Amino acid sequence: MAYSRLQKLASYIRPHWKQALLGIFSLLVVNALGVYIPLLIRNGINDLESANDLSPIIGLVFLILGLASVMWVIRMASRILLFGVGRQVEFDLKQNIFEHLLTLEPSYFSNSRIGDLINRATSDVDNIRRLLGFAILSLANTVFAYALTLPVMLTINVKLTLLSISVYPVMLILVQVFSDRMRDEQMHVQEKLSNISDLIQEDMSGISLIKIYAQEENEQRAFERYNQELFSANLSLARTRNILFPILGGLASLSLLILLAVGDKSIAQGELNVGDFVALVLYVERLVFPTALLGFTITAYQRGEVSIDRVEAIVSVKPKIHDHLDPIPLSTPVKGWLTARDLSYSYPGDKTPALDRVNFTIKPGEMVAIVGPIGSGKSTLANALPRLLDIEIDCIFLDGQDITQLRLLELRNAIAYVPQESFLFSTTIRENIRYGNPLADASEIEFAAKTAQIYGEILNFPQQYDTIVGERGITLSGGQRQRTALARALLVDAPVLILDDALSSVDNQTATEILQNLTTGKQRKTVVFISHQMSAAAKANRILVMDQGRIVQEGNHDQLVQQKGLYQSLWNQHQLEELLI
Ligand SMILES: Nc1ncnc2c1ncn2[C@@H]1O[C@H](COP(=O)(O)OP(=O)(O)OP(=O)(O)O)[C@@H](O)[C@H]1O
Image (cartoon, rainbow, N blue to C red; front, side):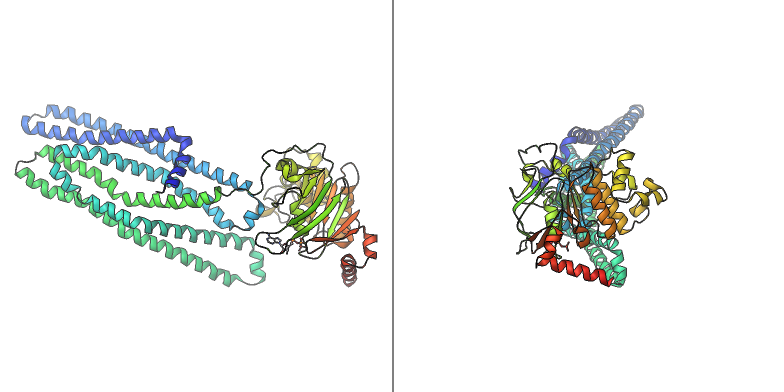
């Protein structure tokens, strides 16, 4: 195993080193007893040959029985301890992976295959558990068995010992030859498994699309192809194992055959007494099992090796967006001034910037609408404000403070953001609304629901706030989902609220009423309203018009509609659409 992987393995075990050490020590004791018992049997047989008296043998039988029982108990303890370490490492790793994933920026997940991530956090962690439980136990057992048994065998009879273990070097060479091939094949299997997880995950999320486009057969074929690839990868691995394992098992048994064949003659020639011969047979038998098991041990080991690499590939990803090393505290109370100075942003690999030297200032309590054609950079701007994108320093300021210098927690507590996709968790409406403020009481939840204009509909649901939505409950309409997501954002009571096309499924009248609720009364906020709904946007205090990543016009509706330019054409287009409806 490469040094770096061994280091990783050591770091997984480190928190549980006492338990691991105790488990290994127990194995040592078991093996020491295992070496001692054949010696007792040898002495018993020799005594019997010379004295023809059964009485000392009876005591010996009880002693052997006692020792074998102790051995059994300690072996059980060693298994519990070492398998326990595997389980604990599995728990730690799953926890670490999940916690690490939470630190990564959304773009990491847009560029990753979710099925593959799930596979790494489950199946690969499982392989590491087996490496730490079964493989280490088995390997330690084999090492102890050899290290303790061989010297005693040599003291009994050097020639017979060397003859009986003469096949072992062949075994080691075979293991060496096959091991790289099996590791590559194992890697292949894990990759194919990830493809399948990924396809299932994507197809289940996009099931409506598959049905609308009647693509069931195509998806079925794609699945069959992946399934076939996994099948072939598994088959090829199984083929290699099926060649190696029986050879190892056969060679291990061969050592016993050699001993029986040669030992027979040695006894006849008086070179060996029966007691020594029986002890040698028992010792070789002790070695046969761990040696024959070597194939399984190697498999578990290699699966674990491959999986360590796959898991480390996730946990070693450094978050691009993180707290400043020496963060500045955000001055409270937060007023909600938002300033952009020459803000530019290009998505990795894109030649044209999605945001190109954007400048604006938004005052506390002001409602600013951002409009523009599709792809003009509105969502990119919305994502940049709460630092969901890796923006440059000194480009965006909240109350005059550069947001890259602030603690992410403080920044995101000050900015509530409702994205285009209103994601709801599969839990009750109450839990969904108070997601960002789990301690909110009933009156606060009710106030947020009223402001988001979803209150009346919630009361009509079968179990009102206890109604479960999503996978395990009722399906909300697009508009209901959006307003529930808005209520959730309102409950965190942040001074700045960004709505990224978050009311697109809500009718114009309701959208306008919601916006009025947000910008009046004691809960007045700075609102950035990104929308294609021109009639709702027209009510904003100020409108920024974006095109190709730049702000090309700025003013209120009355001013902009008089000017020749993009806003006027967007407005005219909107009027035409209203007429046609
Ligand atoms: N994750 C991404 N990776 C690469 N390019 C992206 C990504 N997201 C957006 N873009 C590109 O950045 C530009 C601006 O996109 P953006 O989503 O900000 O536009 P938008 O004005 O919000 O559009 P819409 O009105 O359709 O929501 C587009 O050219 C888009 O293709």
